Length: 613
Image (cartoon, rainbow, N blue to C red; front, side, top):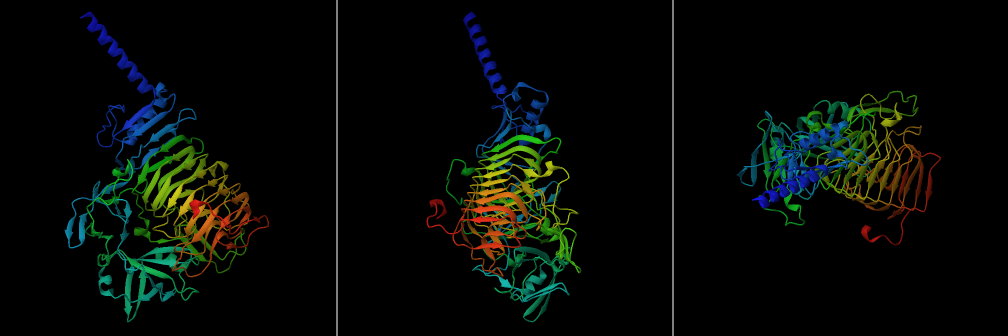
């Protein structure tokens, strides 16, 4: 009996020692399926939500417990972690350089979506009730199917052909189009939208009325987009351009759900209609990796616009946060459903814009128009932060921007990540002044800390960005300094590949010391021209574009001109050394560039690296 008693004491001491070591390691476990937010977050008693894991970590740091001494790692168990609200990361969640807070996904997903279930099949159409979120049926503009994004119903022809406008009537605020064959069905629809190409951007216009005049139909639109579309001078649709008139499509009506993969939601009944693929309901892909089976196999409706909100201030920053091995997925963007979406450039919606009857501002005597913009939505927004890292993460099925370092961000990194099926911009950085700040006026921050600086975007793969808003760039940086965009690969985007700069101004601003190096850009400008594989604006002293491979641009069958360049230094670009870039041909564009531009050894090289073939 004495031996048994001693053995029990020994086992108890060992268990306590193991438990203490586990706790002191600063590990918190999250299991979305079997966890419980009243648990303590240990390996055997995981919490259910990522928010609760951050709360535990926050308390460890607040109370200065030993668990936080050597860093805190939040482990996500494999599976899909559905969020009901954005994860809010605040200054109190900050780690230190020796004790960061790390979220290790281990291949799991963080999703803003809800799976659709129990669809009723009627012919080749599946009918779903919209999920109830809180007390309201979910309204959507996007729908995702397994590992594929799918399209809202449209009149685009089977071979992908778009129609072209006949006239753009500024006085009547109408666009004249060829009368569609199914015009009587279209006129019965209440939610039809027009998607229209206008030079280097596109617009989404909610249709108010369609008046048939034989072979022509006059289309009018709701406010505020009608006012903005017909008053703003740049960019507008083209009639009779060098490559024809602007292309358009009509979208979002039940009568348009006629092709496999198309869908539509009726906002009056909240029903969702999906035209099924022949293999709908079956697994689409064989398991390709140990983590592939965590992806949902059915239809997913995005319920959240933002998954993660990292929100600090200049005086109290969020610092030393790391996300690794996480897939972020399934986000929404609803603004076009309520306001339409007329953009100025780079996917930035116009709030107001008009032509000046008498040109000129104090900052720019030749300016003949003014514009005020707002920022598009983002799946992950970062503000007032230092040393925030995303490493080996995937970003899939985002309706707008995937990750956005908005302001006050320093020394942060996005590295070894994959971006795929992004509706807008994959990575956005820096100030694009919004609100009451006129967009052509050079921006100088009242506090230097507001300018994003020391951001590194390195070794990422961006595939099929700009899928919904063609006028976005794969990587877009505005007023930034000391940014390092290095060794990324960009395949397929509809406008420009990498953009740095904003403001269309030669005057001094907060832009400087920016580097765009060693990137591979293939198949940019697939839908729009007035584009560049690398595109710049304004004065950026001591900046560099070097050793990039820019291989080819897309066919852009509906671009209204041929203005597409491998490197395009647009209005008032200055301060760059542009050298040793390997381009398929020497096709470069400049527009009122300054005197401090140096071009050396750019153009076609005989041998391209294997990965660029």
